[in-house]
Length: 77
Image 1 (cartoon, rainbow, N blue to C red):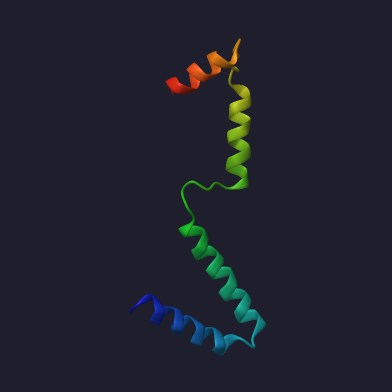
Image 2 (cartoon, rainbow, N blue to C red):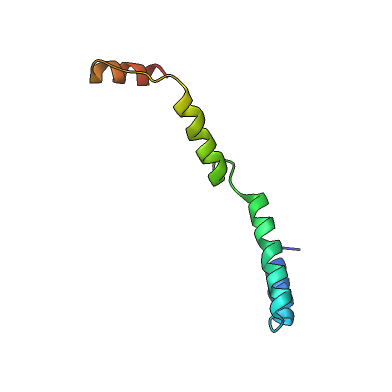
């Protein structure tokens, strides 16, 4: 089945349950779950983001005397 056919089938089934709020809520919840499985690996949850910040804050900082030192450091990465 092609993507267009699948999309049409989903819309047909949605039209069947469109008047039942409970069924629509269940469908929306399941679709959110499926969408979460598809999320891009570069995206992170809010919890992951703040955990990463917490880890970074615990690491010793790096200081530079000049912009040239910063540039040299960044280019070495």
